[in-house]
Length: 202
Image (cartoon, rainbow, N blue to C red; front, side, top):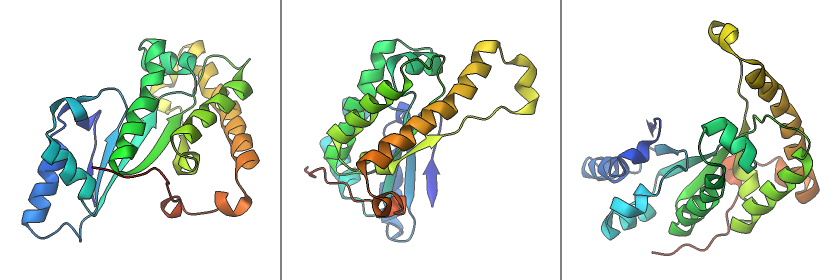
């Protein structure tokens, strides 16, 4: 496997089709799985890639992309990214476009949050929005545990420490949502066996 990681690999969106072209020229497209990260922060993928680039990516046999949701509501998103809260919504637009292209998509989500008062309701809305994109998308989404490492422990302020604790409440709310929407058999599937039903098109 080759992992194109970052940061945000799409700061150079040509990186993915360049790698695919090179692997195909070497006859390795069926032997090496190509993987790339995406923090859902820009739309350079569509701004700067050609139609032929997009067709190559959509048809490539061994490619997967993991997208990161930096929060489950606008408040947690702004806390985790220091970006404008309104940009929380753009994450859903971007991952939907990637799925519609036919890319094999996975996701993870950062649940650190400064507030807990509306966790259950906000998590319900978050999972609703994932299912609006694809019914099974939550089953391909993994909460990302953020841990405190000893070298930076003394530099963490009270707000960050609270957010680290609150993520576990959010994860419990996430589990509750999945238990209410999917059977135990569905939830026990390997993430790679979860089928996404979004129609593919070029």
